[in-house]
Image 1 (cartoon, rainbow, N blue to C red):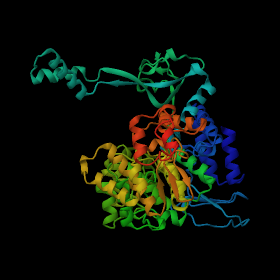
Image 2: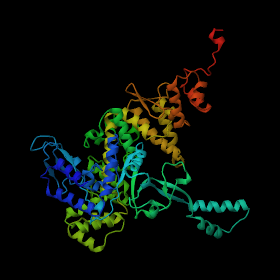
Image 3: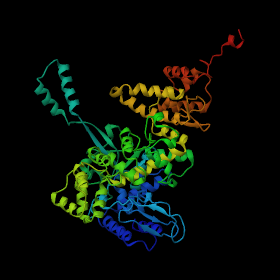
Length: 618
């Protein structure tokens, strides 16, 4: 890890790199290696390298992007150094260390003054203390977002690295909730035909609340047992929910009870890397070559004009429907208030949208009344430390203020006085005091990176984008309305919105899909009903450069296993009749009726039996 870090640093910044870069690397490496954390970095580095080699990008979560060692070893794409130019040819670099820029992605294009090569803009100005603590002795919590498709492979790679007897899934314990416990009491009364007083019902329910109900497994946590120990030194093990066919054994104790004693790696599944892979496969474009400052893509966050539609057509003042982090009604409202125009402002939006006590009645009011702008309100927790250092506060106090504020603990009066003394504005101090929780800047940077890549395809490769979106991110469809055109889709949307809060969770989920379907149709593209000969089991297919063909799973009530069975049977030989489809495709009568009504089966007779008289023309 030590060698890899220095090799990458020299490749990027040369042997004669700036002193503060060299010092930052040295401080981090001394902390990581000196405190025995190097193995955590090495595990993460190997997992990410394996995923990248297999063609799947990995997103980072939390504050891991605050560590320049994590950047140089390939764990994260987020560079925490101050904004800067670096030349990929001669390693010349120029840093902005006084807060002139918030992100290197916002730097204008510039040729290297030494060799004329177009330089790379990089760096997001994130202090390492957010991740490793002020003294560098905080255990690094490296959380990684793998593609949901790749997550099982990443999990199994842990067995390859450490051996099957050294890795276990983190167990969970589901307990009885208070409402469920009350239901047990009422059920007992009903079954035994008795009636307790209200106080006795409450007492019995309270006694049952919190009792173990079943066991499960953490969706991402893998515990690693050291070579000189065995799992039973920490916890008994079991199969989740007593399923002895499960691929992984899990800890009997809830992982919260033992996480201070044994290393846990969080290897999460996420849709964004899956979406990026689908976009790459469909377009042939390497997502890592996509610019982070494309004017057309940036305009999406203020207007849908670049998509060729109006606000009225898609019922949105921005073009960010379906863009992760920026597509919900709440965040679109934030975009309308702020009109972000560059990467660092999008970082602010991401931080503001995930914090508590940060936007509503805080940053939103400051922006509306002109006291501050989206660029200088407090968006992410790390902003506090870097802002205070730029004002002139010492780094240790700046760190402590950040830690207090991000946890909603307020600021001690002596620190407040010191902040005002060095010139921190009163509005900034007041804003800090309202905050209950803050998002890490490194996490926001990684999410915005993925979001802009996806937004690039939505802007310039629309059919590729919609094919990937409906294949990866969507589960519920109204394929009848979608295939009939935009008026039918708008009517379906109206039917759901007219229900208001009475709309079910499934209907609200479908509304999000219909909004994207409407946008696609307004952009001049079409949906085609399921095609018995062409449709895929699960993915939407592009046809003629302007049409998406629905997969079999888009049919209401048709599950993925049946969809795959239909495709497998079709590959053996073509279907001769509806009866043949029903038998070999394992398709129910209800589904046959739906497909018949929607003209999917127009080419098939009802049965395999030939009608002799019809054949003779009688």
